[in-house]
Amino acid sequence: LNWSYNVFSAMIHSVRKLLPPIISGDQNDSTSNIEDSETVHEENEETLEPLLGSYTSYSCDVLSLLYFPFIMVVIMIFREEAEMMKLYNIKESDMEYYLLFALVIIPFQIAADIFMQNSLELLHGWKTFEYLEYCRARFLQREMWWKGLETNTLDECIENSLRSVDQLCFSSQYYMLSTLHVNAIVYLVLGIVMMAE
Image (cartoon, one colour):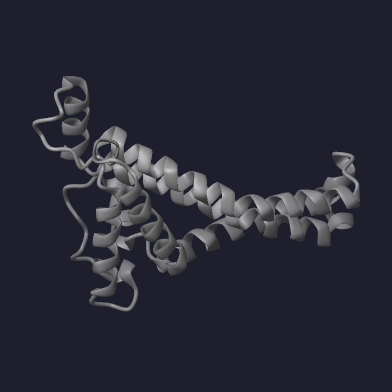
């Protein structure tokens, strides 16, 4: 998933160059006189947890967006065993349209997500891109081949629930673990549905 990181970073840079300085967040402290926005920025810059929580949720959303067409293909292959299309009265030809829609929507959803992440950066004062660059540098300079085995890299300033996510640095290893987890759940549910029928 390095390509998604490269695409995301290139698009953020190009969007920031096109936006005026006030909109892109490059304004000087003398021009920002709104007290409410300053307090929001100060509250969210103190901790990393809101950024981590938001980006973790976003990474799961992107994973489900990319994984959904595969699930639909599995359901189409095992249509008689699962009988899900019969239960919901979905024709086989309609399922192909659903699959086509799931594939076509991917680039447009990713483009919309880029603008949404940029809006979250501006609204909350998060440094998402800088954090992702920092994560990439930490992942490339890891001491062990598997990032999860490094016990001395846990950040004690971060909540316990988000430390392992931060430790995996939103790397390819993180996405592989997430994909394995989703695969296990999907196959378990499909297996239970097939046995119940």
